[in-house]
Length: 164
Image 1 (tube, rainbow, N blue to C red):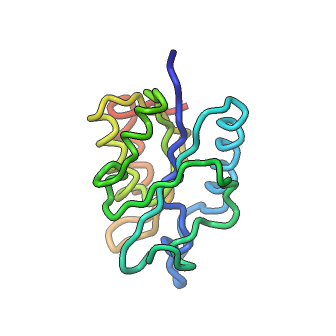
Image 2: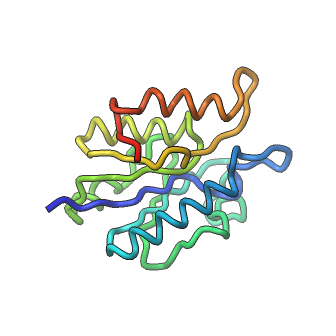
């Protein structure tokens, strides 16, 4: 039997700088909550992955999840220090203990932690899916956030994951 888990990456207060906004954040948070609801209805596990570094210090206000997210104590919480959610964490072990072989991915930032985690999960043999538009990022000096997201969705599509 195939089991799925929802992996929500780095939707933390400190990922959005005071002087900038994550692209389409309000909509992303709303739709992530809809996906959380779907997974809860099916009794499928939900994993919140939180980055921890000098800017997102463990347990600090910046490290906290966006308060709009419907996180519960019964969900799984993974702390990471690298863009790869599997690197030096127990994410893979926890997924395997639960017999999870399908992952739905969402979160921030598209070109960093989300992309790295997708590629690693694919390499580990997980079947991946994503609802189009459920990652977010910031504009950078070269590209706007919308272009970054569209570019990565194009790269991932039918190579690393399937969209629905």
